[in-house]
Length: 260
Image: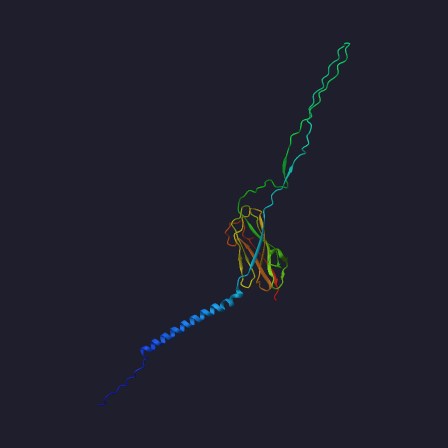
């Protein structure tokens, strides 16, 4: 009987020390890579996103209260007037005597000053200086002009729909409470055609009585170039204030911004 021969193959194995050495080397490589990535992020990422910074926005506003009825005060002349009072003259009949005749006497009326009078009259059709509050407010937005600023001051506004290259785009708008009750507290937002599609959110604005309005001038830089760059203004965007009508809260206008 022929004996059977079995061939056994043994796979080579790394020593335990070599495995530990490889693990240490791998850990060191990961640490070095992490440090390098942190340095790269700190040095180069701010430079890469520098052009994506938010736009600088300037805002001015002027409050105008609702028109109140004018008054006209009439004060008469303070000169005294004479009251028509008089006393009948007293006549003494002559007596048939030889004595001299008796003279007639007459009582002269004493002037008395007239009473001072003063009247206040409402001018126009208004019947009351204080409106009666009822119902709901109604905040309405209206864009009155678009243009640009020649300086950082909003008083340098120039009205035009074509904006020179590099100029601060600007918009004039008015927010009015055309409702019948006080509007408070309220804010507005402005969607601006900047390089990062910036949305400006205002601080809380003052309460507006019926008829009150505020005129605004808002300017910004980093505008996109090209035609049909749209500026949108929305009052009470989140409907925090209950209104009788939300359909007039927004207004928009377009400008052409020239490139360099």
